[in-house]
Amino acid sequence: MHCKSSPLLALAASTILLQTASAAYTLTDAYTAANWFQSFLFFDQADPTHGFVQYKNLADAAKSNLIAIDSSRSTPAIYMGVDHTTKDPAGRASIRISSKKSYNHGLFIFDIEHNPGSICGTWPAAWLLSDSGKWPMGGEIDVFEGANDQSFNKMTLHTTADCKIQSTGFSGELETSNCDVNAEGQGKNMGCGIRHPMPAGQSFGTGMNAIGGGVYATVWTSTDIQIFHFPRADIPSDITAGKPDPSKWGMPTAKFAGGCNIDAHFQNLNIIFNTAFCGDWAGEAWSNSTVCSKKAPTCNDYVQNNPEVFKEAYWLIRSVKVYQNAETVMDKRGFGDWLKKTWHKIVGDSTTEATGDTSHVW
Image 1 (spheres, rainbow, N blue to C red):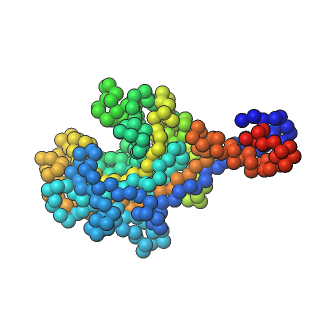
Image 2 (image 1 turned 180 degrees about the vertical axis):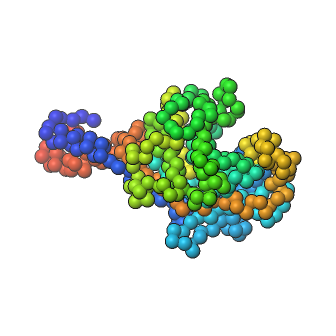
Image 3 (image 1 turned 120 degrees about the horizontal axis):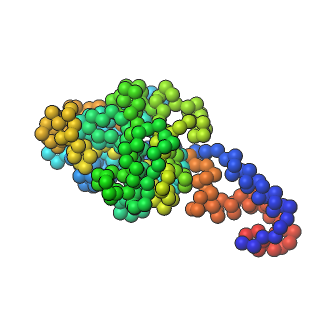
């Protein structure tokens, strides 16, 4: 680009800077009962985490009453459950969905009224996963996850090598600091994890359901990844008004920052919900649970032979909303287009009309 100095150019530059500084988060995608099942893809292959589960496609999930829209309420909600009537030796029927759209940065607000609960054998999660290659290339952000009778939420990043986080700047409890799934001194695939044991276990599972659920908000920028949790009674008014302002929310529950190049490790993430059974976490941890290990010799045995206990293993989602601000559009993936549009919006065609020369415009 070749530019000539002028008062108009100075005015344009000043306007651009002011717009950037004052830009608020704006809604780009709202996943609600009105468009939910049209906006997600249903995964129906073998579980990558080796669970005792059969993921169903959209048609089979609807036929089996695993999914529904609850329209009998002032705010319609999305129901996503599991089979709780049969004893299938091939695994319990469930769902795993992934958003058709992928993202680079943004503010993601998960409004969860009910989650699958602290039930032995379950492994529910709401998360962001890259479509950029073999896992963990492109990264994974676990916003909401737990297994078996767990009563607290665990927030985790999974990456390739050279991504570590600091131990300060958040209210949760640091469990592991190296996000590399092959890090020495940590269990395989653990990543960097922060737990959030609210009073009476209200951040996850049965305890969270007892208070009507709440909101998990994830802020993903080039600098860090922050996760905030708000119980139903404490959701900030700016969120309910559709004008979220993370700068007013105080200390995050989790903050992943420090020795990690966020943009190098996280690209093209899709929103995912699923409920798995047993597998690499709930199954492997079965013998370590004093509650669950007394119910059956193995996780698979318990999940297969006790369908009725999984009636409460369902999601009830009010919405997932994705917002973006100037930081998002000004990152390396979108700065050029944003600057060009902003320039022409301010300058218009006045320079070309006066000089007949377009080289200094763009």
